[in-house]
Image (cartoon, rainbow, N blue to C red; front, side):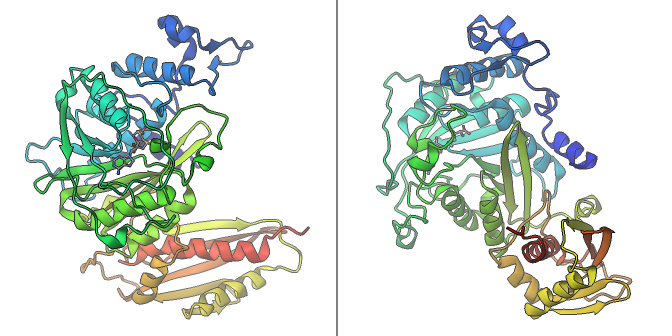
Amino acid sequence: MGGSKKRKRNEQQQGSNGIVYSESPPDFALLASLYPSFHAFVQSSPPHMRPTIDWTDFNATRELTRVLLHHRHNLTWWIPDGQLCPTVPNRCNYIHWLQHLLSSDIIPGTISRDAKVRGFDIGTGTSCIYPLLGASLHGWSFVGSDVTDVAIEWAEKNVSSNSHISHLIEIRKVKDNGNAPCVEVEESVNSDQTNSCKKTDVEVAPLPLDLHVCENKNYHGPPILVGVVRDDEKFDFCMCNPPFFESLKEAGLNPKTSCGGTSHEMVCPGGERAFIIRIIEDSTQLKQHFRWFTSMVGKKSNLKYLVSTLWGLGVSIVKTTEFVQGRTFRWGLAWSFLPPVHKPSISLSKKINTSFTLEGLQRQHSAINVLETVKSHFSSHGLSCSLNTSSFTVDVAISKDDCDSISRNDLTIVNNSTDCQPKRETSNESSLNISLEKLCFRISVFQQIPGTLLVKGSLQDKNSPLSGAFSVIFQQLEEALRSKFCTKSL
Ligand SMILES: C[S@@+](CC[C@H](N)C(=O)[O-])C[C@H]1O[C@@H](n2cnc3c(N)ncnc32)[C@H](O)[C@@H]1O
């Protein structure tokens, strides 16, 4: 990874308490010396190796979360056996990214009149981890929703155990409207309730019939935002760690860690894609209630699909990021319907030049072959392009309509911090006399060493209102060239 990209990620993952978990992983030896209850789970390690725990032992991972929350965040916390146990660094990364989004002022400022940040955590779980971290790190207030009794009960307990922030967090029970998910579920109810935090129940009307088709790929569970958010409520953001899996079988596939999790927490018909699509559908009805809609995404293929869906819905901006913690990769997806505030610093994150290499090419595949394929790739989509064999370039010009259809295409992919700003800016007429109605870029091919070609894309006008589509188009080209030239021979 490039230094600047790593720096940027670290900036995004740094909290106001200065903790960057990716650079400063938890010190198990120190924690063991401070917390005898944790000591029992720490495994001795050979000299020069860091002590560790048995990641497949639920009790060990829960105790690690408990002591980390206490030691680094001054939080008192617990969850019952078998519930999803959050890893603190991973959850902090999401909070830090939100902080970065909110402070960037890409879209107009804080919604609440008293300038305090207010968030909505969809599916807060028994752990209530995001509201606890957001309130303790940044003083944000939250509504945390969930559907299960056990989540509501323990989220409330975790809030009331932290009296210094309990006034900032409301736990809201979403009542199922009779459309229970078509998955096997375990019920886990605990009758011992402690209610010193704010609690509200929301009765919701049944959803429109067309959203309830009990088909495997459609979400047909309880309401998520529409019917749960009240008419007079406004939030700076919503966040969500959705049920990732489509089935119990899929959920049981990772034997290397034991973070627990019941079927209610982990499984949703259609998986995370269906769940987030419902959030997206809800967001179109709640445009004015949230500055940012966000969700965690567990599969990169879903991220591509979701971004392309958002493009088709007329959002004003989409942002993505990558959360990396240890060997776990997750993605953050954020969108808004509010018009972006134009700031020159925002456009710096747009890529003007981007490239990839094609390696291990057979002799017969020269730079000219690749260039011709570039030309035919664009021509086959009916796009206007010209090949120059002396400069080894292909110049491409794409109309706004073609950009729109490419953006809606299922093949969409985005880079970190891709900004998609369809908003027109009238004062940015380019000195190159490039039409605002066209996206113009150049593809160049260079031979690096025999068998390796560099393919570079250069956007001609970074201020073009269509420039957000460039990374999508370039990624599609990369996929096409790789599949033609880089297929391994058997
Ligand atoms: C993967 S867990 C996330 C828990 C916690 N936020 C975390 O990050 O560890 C998903 C949670 O969403 C809840 N959930 C499922 N459907 C929901 C809905 N329609 N509204 C609110 N919560 C829901 C589940 O009960 C579960 O607690």
